[in-house]
Length: 144
Image (cartoon, rainbow, N blue to C red; front, side, top):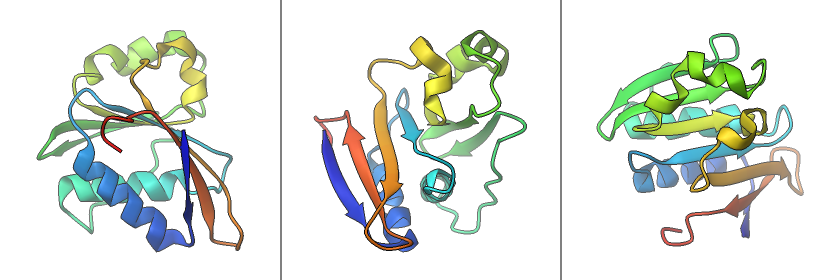
């Protein structure tokens, strides 16, 4: 497990873009953190980098629970599980089928045991300054 300090939103976006360059089909990236810690900022930058489109509209899938995108690396599913009724509801969202592509999961703890063991876990917490964040990274020791 390691930690990095992200001094501001552009640093979070830059880290997300670098991580997008390392992502491969079959990867699951779990975004942990309280509301307002930058999970959606990270997800938006990650998806824009993968799609190679800095203006890509990336709405939060809070109500739809999942939004899919076509990228050069294949399908990417962006999950927001905040409103999920429980892990049994994942089947209705195409959880198993979407694992063939890249999965970006906000509020992954709601998936409970359905999250694959190989998932990369990123936890965003408050940093030293107002916009600063600290990111704890667990997983992908072979790539990071």
